[in-house]
Amino acid sequence: MSVRALVFDVGGVLEVVDDDAWPELWVHRWAERAGMSPEDLDAALLRHDPGGSVATGEVTEEQLRRMYAAALDLGDEEAEQMTREMWDAYCGSLDVELRDFVASLRPGYRTAILSNSADGARREEQRRYGFEELVDLVVYSHEEGVAKPSPEIYERVTDRLAIRPDEVVFLDDVGENVEAAAALGWQAVQHRSTAESIRRITELLREP
Image 1 (cartoon, one colour):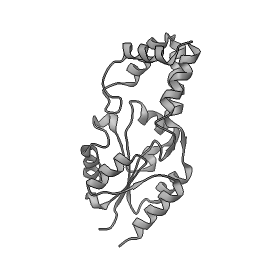
Image 2 (tube, rainbow, N blue to C red):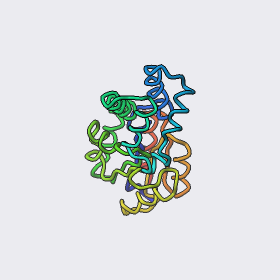
Image 3 (tube, one colour):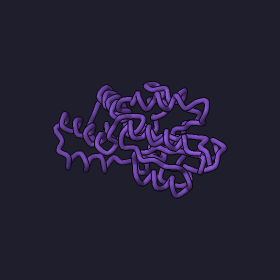
């Protein structure tokens, strides 16, 4: 079956960022400024943890801000600065070559973003990178209440694009997410480098 749509992850794919590393680096910089050890920081965050998952929207941006501000004993200006630094780290930098490749796919194909995300991500990524103009559909896990690799969030994407699973090419850097998409019939590619991903997707688009 020919490809009709392409779906792209954000963090680690369209955005150059190490999603596993930046949160710890970011918060530990603030802990050092406050003179707190990593152990003291972990204990303080646990005391103020609102509970729930950021990726499924159970924890809001404001709740996170309050949690870190309370744990680190920050004033309002410091808390706002910390939040700004968080979003800078979260959004990383744009992979311009991959963005341009995605932009080149329309109007011949439907395109979408599928991202495990946090409250505020749509605002921040739109402000920086204009993803809503880049693709036809943007699906954020925190808005859906379900996250990759749950089959439900993939199914919502195909439903909204009005296509079959075997008509989708999907690019994600997390192996678990790629495997989950493939299990549903998507043509899933694990992102390791921009050049390799573009080459592999182009090959898939050329297949009959």
